[in-house]
Image (tube, rainbow, N blue to C red; front, top):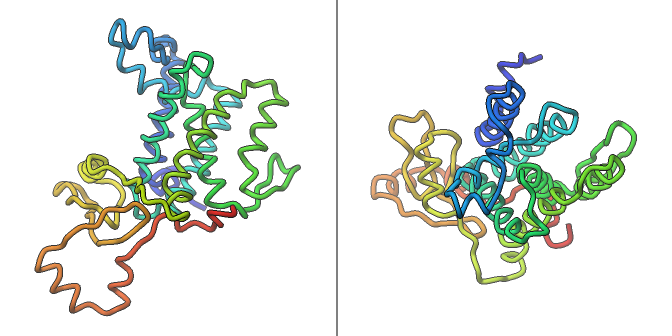
Length: 278
């Protein structure tokens, strides 16, 4: 059985970074180091007083230490990690882009007055759960050891539980909207023959390469030389970028076996799902 330190080191980088950031934000709030409303999303203060940090910090507050906070943290540790190790394996930049796109979509949605919520971290976590449910629709889930259902229905079951417990449903619904928008653009639309390709921007690849954590098999940029992770390989994926190789890399590729060459090809969303009928 692994120790807590070994478990922490085994976590994939994006889920680990986001989970730790949320935990530290709540710990600082518990120690009364700041007022939560100083990091809440408030468009009036963003545009009138240039409190631009609110556009980012509101995603890291999942509430005070409580059962709901623990549940959301477990969602990151379970479903976020499952995505990063499964469909997004060796696609760190794509996973980062999913989180960034989800956060941006939620900010746009929150600009509508009756859809605004001060802390959109709730919705971002629910978006991750929704994408997981579409990638693993046939996975078996037990809720409190009482109800067993398929992964596809997990967001709806959590929505029902929040309704029973009297929690607000707005963050959950917004997260499902953002998650479905991302899944439609990256999976459903391309599989239906759509011409629009939802690529991960180059600047996201550069950030991940500079960060030096994780891997991206189709990265169009070189990794940070001082980092321990090397971005290498070439792949074709839904909405992906194609990269050119140097003559030296081409010569090495010609000398390699067919099996080794096939290992360099990757496709997006390799999880167990039926994307059009899921």
